[in-house]
Length: 400
Image (tube, helix red, strand yellow):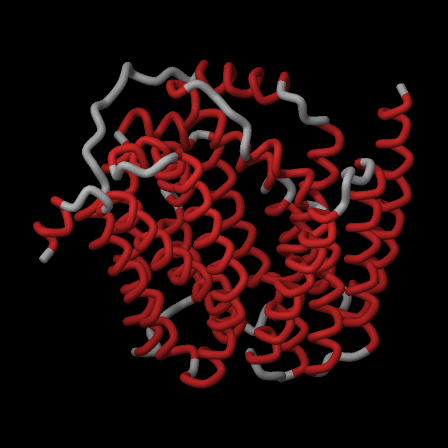
C-alpha cells in the first residue's frame, strides 16, 4: 500500500500534511497532559512551571539554530530523528507512569530529550513545504491554503478536544494517545518525506545574516517584541495559569477544554473582524487592546473559577489574542531566498516565542511564593501597565 502511495504524485505533500496533523494532535495532548502529570507527581506549581520553562527554552533555542541543524543533517533526517526521539520518550513516559515508576526528575529529563529536536524539525519541514508541493504538482497558493487550513483546524480543536478526552479516559490512558500520535507521525514521515540533496555545509554566520535580513524587513521591531510578549502571556494563560487554577481548586481538566474552546472561538471572531476592516489598526491600538483583554480575562479568573467563568475568560482571552494576528502575519510569511529560507524561518518563529520561557517561570514563581489570587492581582496590574506603556511607546515611534 505504501509503495503505491509513494508512486502517487500527490503523496509527498499529502503524507507531510497527515504527519503534521498526527504530530500536532500529539503535541496538543502533551501540552495539556504533561503539566497535569507533573502536578500529580509533585503537588508543586513551581515544578509545573519549571517543566514548561525547560520545554519553552528548548523549543526557542531549537528554532534559533533550527536552520543550521536542518541544513547540516538534511530535512528528512532531522524530521525523522525528531519523530523517533519523540515517540521513544513519550513511550517511556507512558510505561513509567502506568507502572507508577515515573519520578519528577525522570519526567523532566524525558520531556527535555523529547523536545530537543522539535524546533529544527519544524523549521526543516516548513522550509521545504514549497518544494514538496512542487514535487506533488501543487501550486504554491493551493499548498499554502491547504497547509494553513489544516494547521488552523488542529490549533483550534486539538487542545480543547484533548482536555475533554483526558477528563473522560483519565491521564494514564491519555498518555498512550501521545505515543500513538508520535508513532503515526514517524511512519507517515518515513514514507512520504523526500530525500533532498544536501547543500553546502551551513555556517553559524548564516544565522547572523538571516537576523540582518529579518531586521531589515518591513516589520517594526518594537511592535513585534511587544506583540510577542502579549502572545507569550496568552500561551502561559492557556497552558499554565488555567491548569494551575483548576488543580488548586480540585476541578476537572474538562474545564480547561471549555476555556480553550472559548478562546479559539474568540480568536476566530476577532480575526474575521479585522479581516473585514478596510485598514488595519495602528500598532499601539493592537498591542494595548490585546494586553487589556488579557488583563480582563485575569480579572474574571480572579473573581471565580467555574465552568461559566472558564468560558467567559477564554472568550475574552481569545478576542485579545485575535488582535495580535497582524503583528505576526508579515514576519511569519516573509519571503526569503531558497538558500536562507530555513535560517530566516527559524529566527521568525523564535521571535514570536521569545518571551514565553521567562513568562512561564516568573508566573510559576509568583504563584508558588504567594497564591493564585494574589498573582492574579499582580498580573492584572502589570498587564494594564504594559498596555499603557506599549501604547505610548509605539505611538512615539510612529510619530517619529
